[in-house]
Image (cartoon, rainbow, N blue to C red):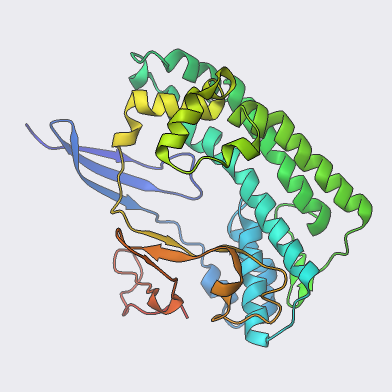
Length: 319
């Protein structure tokens, strides 16, 4: 049988332009190539500028995770200039990072991923009708609920950051806000609404505390079957449909995982250093090679442009 070539350009539902080329033989993909050809030149824009311009320029890289770029830009300046951070500044930076991360979860699931589960190729599956009813783009009941709920966490970001996206409230040495009791109370109220109206009632079908008791695959499967609420929750439906559709057999990686870690403890990173970051993390960093866990070492990180359109240069550490 002849090899079939399929080109998709651009691939929708991703940030920026992405082209995909796959070669198939007897219905099986034998080769796959992805290519992101759009170059915006942020590195060139920053060259020769005041280092603080990174606080304004780099968050514009993305309309969803701009706060992460601001977080990194301010942290880089703190490290370079040896500034001292107060506990409240670290808390407020972590809060911004956390709320932006939380908002991305329902947006990614409903708008980027789950809509593909409503594709007609799964129409012969028993759960297809229910999946389509909930996850179909724009018209699905959960699609609408999830995207609406995703806007709530970044309202908290805007309370402390002034706006979202593209806030500039993180600066070298701290943040540009002094929360009042009213601010904190509003933030609690917004997140409680997010929890009650979507996270626990629609997504989990149980309390966060119950979900966090899950420690293994067997625990997860038992959780799905534990009661009707969890079984019919969006997460419960996703798990059941994924197994029925065979999604658990697709896309297996190489079994190696890297985590840079997230959220710095308010009392353990007041004097930022690159070497001290690992010990200050709340969500720890590390590398799993498939058999053993290793501490994260940034000196082992190497960047190269071999498979890109850039002029080839020797692989090197990011800075």
